[in-house]
Length: 269
Image 1 (tube, rainbow, N blue to C red):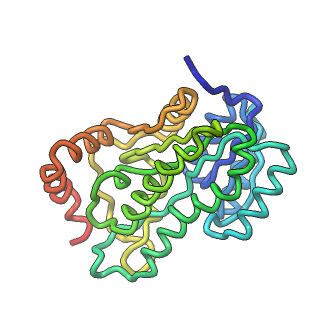
Image 2 (cartoon, helix red, strand yellow):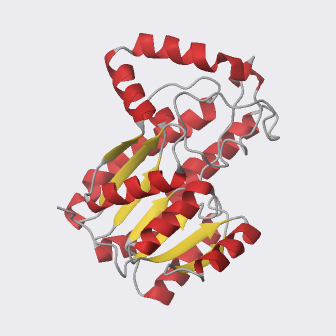
């Protein structure tokens, strides 16, 4: 039986204008939530809001860069004043890179960490008092790279491993407060994050991404995340590739590393 109902609950979703972000806004909005979307892309966020005007989804959008702590704090306070409560935070905003570490400008690694880890840290910190008040929930989008090595993505993997360390440690701290935490680990979802990945010099990467398995449709992914949130799951391995990677890396890490390197080596050569 579902433990949580998101009808009339205030849900903040970062990276709302991206492929998975849009799908999450729709899924939780159709479940009755009051959706607040955060994204740095002003035009895409405005168009998303226009699209939702033709649907039952109750959507409010704010333009912000998740790595900006001062703006995050101000926006979280504004949302709390506007709606009177915050029930769910979905840390979805993300940035990837594909490049051999030895050739990568360290600024690229820092930028990935600023968005993926510190962006989630900023929004979690800013909304935590309200989430404790409402006995709410935090959902954070991680990746296969959050529990296993991934060739050509050292900074991305570092950011996702950091999310696991942080939120798995935060979970027992918040257990008595009634705040649940779900980590979501997809493999490949058909979203623009891979098209927008950074290369070694910080510019958009030029080579095509190597995909293992079939890309998951964002709408399907969003529905599975909604279902897992209702059940208060702690970990969601999203897709067959994610589940296979999780267990293979745990049971036969050398085999996993060798197979992964063979499949992805073309991306950094």
